[in-house]
Length: 240
Ligand code: DC
Image 1 (cartoon, protein in one colour):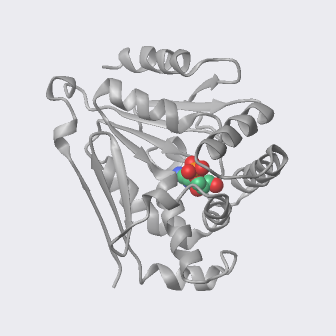
Image 2 (cartoon, protein in one colour; image 1 turned 120 degrees about the vertical axis):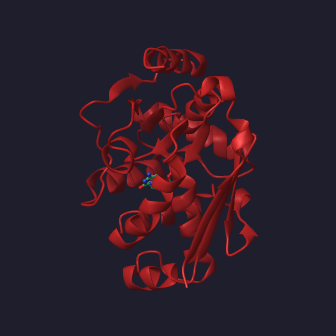
């Protein structure tokens, strides 16, 4: 039986900031700074930060752990019915469980990144994860980050952003992140990985990475994290 559950500590959403429980959608390619700014924006607003990539990564982790080929769509679809995915939110951080095991620390390896990109192109995986994302975001007061937040998961979000950045800058940022997390590997490898994921994410037939028509573009190539968050905060504040 499929069991997808989630829980969240509502205490983290400051009451005085709930006057309008906005849904903020942030989309963009890998390495553009989405997670960092989404987390900070959510914290400034007292909103829940929903990292939807973590759901795809947790599913990919389970595929690898089961010894399956991530490209085998039938095997991946069959596996879904045996998976219980749980996300717990507490003080701005999410813990992700797969069949009761906390996998949060194992989701950002290059192997999981690449498998997540492959399985996220599969209709069965996207259909499986869609309701859980919507359920988490249904009460508003959420900053949701991913590839199809503004187009597919939360098409009527109150504020939508699409972040872009020069591919070289994105690869350097992602490489620094990996090195800081203790992974080895050359910058060239990260650049190639990122280019591959970009192509897959943008060209897949289902929920490709495209900006929503009403999304506000932010090019983060030359902006600091604080500058990006300030720009976003100004746009959100106008709707509060
Ligand atoms: O944001 P991220 O790097 O953690 O995402 C991991 C992979 O999951 C990425 O290659 C694309 C996919 N993804 C997706 O297709 N849709 C989302 N809403 C979030 C992530």
